[in-house]
Length: 164
Image (cartoon, rainbow, N blue to C red; front, side, top):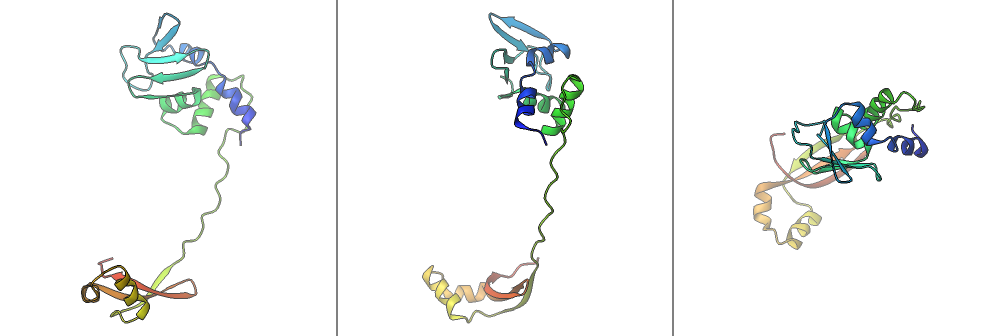
């Protein structure tokens, strides 16, 4: 896992230098640098790079950010893929841990088992329908009182019949 200090070091890599080494076409308008966006077909340089802030903005897509965001866009990759690409382009970076942290084990999804579906008769469910101004006769035609189990506990609720 990368430390904040290592991430800051990566973000301080000059975008102008990085793009220049990649031979990306550029032009200077006053004190502003414009590059052709290397992640799309851009014949007229429309990606602005602020040298002092070391940030970019592509007027063609409305995207922008730091050097990591730029490398992600160029290589269509995630954060760690961008870090690896930057390391390859800047071998002097001494960042050994450019791999994602292991993801936590997936939690088991509780299994729902339908025990039965019967006509609605429970007073609590009938009161629920009444409180919400649902016509009980319509609800009795369209819904069922469904009894089900999740893990070792049983419950009941209103349910619509479906093909699933």
